[in-house]
Length: 306
Image (cartoon, rainbow, N blue to C red; front, side, top):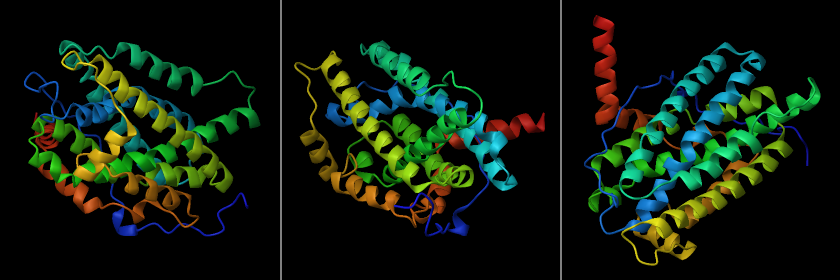
């Protein structure tokens, strides 16, 4: 197995747009604990995003600020800076959901403390000598972010088309948070992979870090869902299983197991490029109608007029 790209991934040029952070805000006082009515399992499976993303996306930003000096392409530098701005806003928006959960009787602190440890300690900066060792660890994390972004873009694309959530009466504020975030993940889906190709691009590293990222995501997600179900004050003997996940996928309230499995060989293909998946036009169309995103645009325009 060669450690270089034997086939150069082909980006879809029309899918590239300039990135900008949108200073959104959400109000949670009218959102019920089970924001998908009658379905605590789906509610809590998706709620795991609020536990993982604040620490995870702060980690993205921290790593990318370190890699900026290695970027020699000006357009990519601008993309990375736009990515940093969007991810910082995502972290803040999901972080603001946690007090709402606590007020509903679901204190996420025991779980988020473990997630913070993972990103800040296990995946954080290490005391390494300058040179090859320090750069190796930086490149490992850059590659790992590219693998994680494959799945955030997958989820973003899914939630933009998840009409079953609307049909079942999902809370509109939570749906807007998820779809605003999902649309921006689709919008910037190529940045992490392009950065990885620019600073390293080794295929063995891509495969190795994908395996690490995928295993960690599956472990953390099932652990988070079980944490929520077991600690939900409205449930008696709340439980979660992969069978529940499979059933919800077939019902359309979560991604299907098959779609998740099929995403694996696509990422591991030597010709893979994120722009080949999802639709920037669909993402931009949602952002043009999102209550939170349009409110942020109006507020920004008003400040500019002052």
